[in-house]
Length: 124
Image (tube, rainbow, N blue to C red; front, side):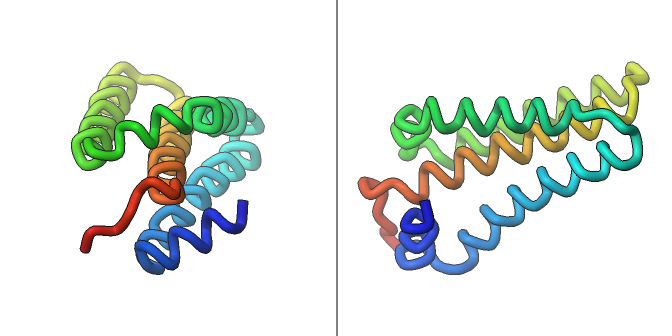
């Protein structure tokens, strides 16, 4: 697994590595905050499921590489709509934190599997 991080760093630079690591840290931070503050583990479970789904669907995540920008923008838009609707309907804070951490895991999976695949080359 470490060779994938090295590949991202060598081909795309430290900025992409830091962006990807930040998403993983955000997931862990949201989940830890929820576990400490609300004593629930929805974020861990939802995020873990999304990370597992990313591993299972990694070939699909790599295949959408030519549409990477559109996929990320669409995913973040959908996340914003879901979060806004949940916030307006009065959903509990721990569920909102779970939505944020699930979105972080989804973006992490897209970034990590896309940028670490040997078929993806940096054209810049």
